[in-house]
Image 1 (cartoon, rainbow, N blue to C red):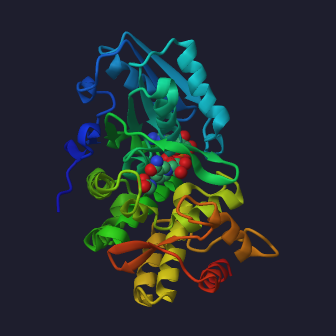
Image 2 (image 1 turned 90 degrees about the vertical axis):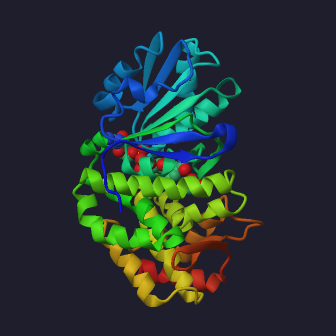
Image 3 (image 1 turned 120 degrees about the vertical axis):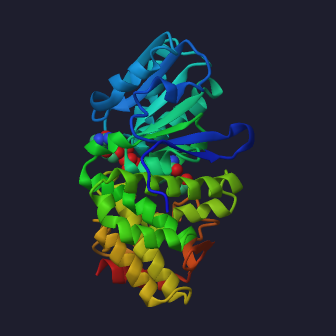
Length: 369
Ligand code: NAD
Ligand code: GLY
């Protein structure tokens, strides 16, 4: 299996909306990375108070030759700011700077900046081009790829948004050096996800290389990012707007989103919710007779080793399972009020299914005990 840090490219095949995902060191500050972008007079780099001081100047310098004017907008940091008020700051800046239809937006940050900037790009003047420059592991292996953009609503996670593809995705391995350990673990959750839903050989590889990933060894990170992007690109190419197959990418997310919104956005990281949510979804798969106990134990051990929670938080002192169920009904996968879960149908395969409420309650009770 290849484990190289020389620049690699994964293509996402979406007809005229196809684009490359570039993975490698030193991409962010290299003008050549952006050579394929269309000509425009203005660019706007959207970042946040944590990431902009680290990387905005480097990106700005790389873009200098391509755009006459390059503005930088620095947003507040945090999942709690993935909302209308912060989105409005992007529109305010674009109008104040006289951005036109050719203006290129650059999302420089984690999934929060990426999702919001993508949504702003989808809606400003009914659509302007944008580039994803993800700076967290989670964003490099998942959120920057595939064109899901949007914001949270107090009543439900990612409930407002649009499908809108970027022109390219630039995964610079160097930025991961400044990523805190807790955020690295959050990214590992989304990497682990790809194993049980699509590629058990990749799960074997993650198990064998987890220590190298936790130590941020560049070759291990490069391989994990590339394989994750390959799997995601293949799924998205088959079902861009999630009419079926793409839902498998939400393994662990139904329980995870309930935890995130139930505790209040930002209390648990998205990847932490997904990590614990995968344990719960695997347990539900087992209770339905789809997978066996050793499979669930194996996945749980790996998630725990990655530094992620495997026990779920109490969301209500009086009716905890009821609260989970109410939160999970506000999910894009629900139909006519019926919750649908991504379940592992056999190791390496997943499908969207409903489940008897008593079994779901038993999983919640067991995980929160
Ligand atoms: P995040 O964007 O909040 O970033 C995590 C933290 O790391 C932030 O404090 C950020 O400022 C900081 N940070 C980012 N890059 C850094 C760096 N290089 N060095 C130091 N600090 C850095 O969180 P995230 O985990 O990247 O993304 C989570 C979001 O992504 C959630 O809102 C989730 O819903 C969304 N998401 C979207 C998709 C999708 O398909 N669009 C998929 C998965 C997740
Ligand atoms: N992260 C799930 C998806 O992109 O569909």
